[in-house]
Length: 211
Image 1 (tube, rainbow, N blue to C red):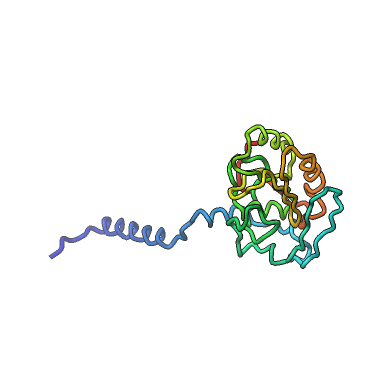
Image 2 (image 1 turned 180 degrees about the vertical axis):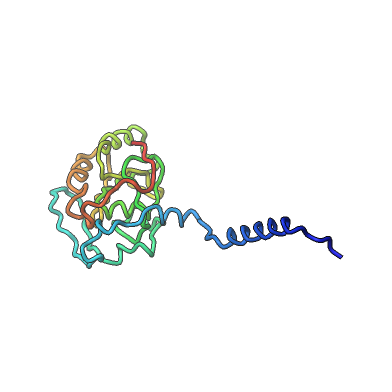
């Protein structure tokens, strides 16, 4: 025969079992889940019809030699499918992305592609550089970026070119630095005509930039 369990002990045992069951039912928060849910897109920053339409490539009216522009497809704005791994040696000009954008600013480590793409959707210029770029050149690039609210700067793991400037649907590859076109690209395309979500923020989400 088992010893008689006192009512109080039985009650405590039931509470422990109930708590264990509740914990087991909680969803597992993976790193990807946390990244994807840092911020939910504000309705005020979306187009009035809450959707996007296919758009032709914008003309290169910047006057900057070498700028390439690309047609914008509605599918690239998807927050469900996620492009988060480099597919070439330079960043893509758009793509499916996380619901959280990368806070604009200067980073000395690579940032998530799926988050940086969302920053670009909000009007950011993403300046990426070759990971082994000379430290003095990196410092000079930082001086060009510092103080800009809609510029994201970071090394890009697979990049072979010294510098690539990318905005949503727009790109300029820089083969040698310094290059006056870097400052010109930032001045024209930061929150510029390629911006599919005018007024959307580039802060308050993911990341702690150096500056």
